[in-house]
Every structure is written in structure tokens, then in C-alpha cells.
Length: 212
Image (cartoon, rainbow, N blue to C red; front, top):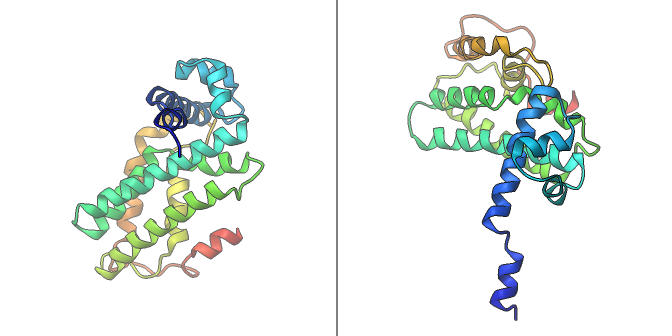
């Protein structure tokens, strides 16, 4: 039987958890600003921790990139769940998610993921699945309420959000930030039912995105 003192030693201390969160936050900011090759020393400085603390939490760059990507995806999921929990207009919940994606600089995720040696790591796959489930639910509710046009799919939404949101990591084009939510709102207005035009081709599905 495990003694209380042993159990306490196994549980992460509050300060250790705070340090880990500071590292992830600093890394996310610097990856977006300068790309994923930013030195760990600089990340440690911005996080206000020692180099050893960074390496103790993340033994290599892949582990840190993976944690940053998963944390961003999880925050967008929580934003969507919060919007759904408000119990209002189904399309408003979808809009809330789209704008939250922009605030999280979701467009930086693809180059971050491709910079890792294991794009199919179980943690990344689980985070992707959480995003996929919540987006399908958001779109399904809006479509069932007659508020979302029927000729758009998961892929249409995610591709447009990535393209219209802030520049990819390291692009240093932050001067366009002030236009992001304006342009996303124009896109969202185009998703509303009834449709005012016929879209060429067919709806882009999740499977289409996976096949590239």
C-alpha cells in the first residue's frame, strides 16, 4: 500500500505545474513569432524559468511542440464547449469557435505539426479527434436549426479559418491582425442559410483533409 508521503511525492507540485504552463505559453508565443526553431534558452528566459526546468519538462523539441499544439487545440475545444453550453443560437456558437481559433493563431498549427518527427503521435491524434468531434457537433446543430447552408463541410470551415486567420508561425505579418475578425465575420456570413449562390465542386469533408 502506498504511503501518503509517497503519493505526495508522485503528485506534481503546484509550482511545477505553473512552471510547465509558463513554458508552454512562452513557447507558443515565440513559435508563432519566430517559428519552432527558437532556442530553448530564449523560451526559458521568457517563461522566467531556468534551462534545466525546460529540459526536465520537455526532453526534446518535438515534445514541446507537441504540447503547444495540443494545448492550443484543447483551448479551442473548451471555447466551443462553453459556447454550446450557453444554449443560444447554434450559429452563434459556431461563430464563437471560429473567432476563438483566430485568437489562438490556429493557422500556425499546421507548420508546427509538420516540424515534428511524429505527426501521428497519440497525443496529437487525441487532440485532433477532440477538435473534429466538437466542430462536427457545432456544424450539425447549426445545420439542424436551418442556420448553416447545406453545401459546406468540415473541411470547408477549417481550411477557410486557417487561411483567414493570422499569419503562420514566423511570418512576422502582425500588421494584418486588425483585419482578421472582420474577414472571418464576412466568411461566416457566407455560411448562413439560405445560401445566396451555388458553390462549385462538393463539400470538403474530414476525409478529404486527411488525404490532403
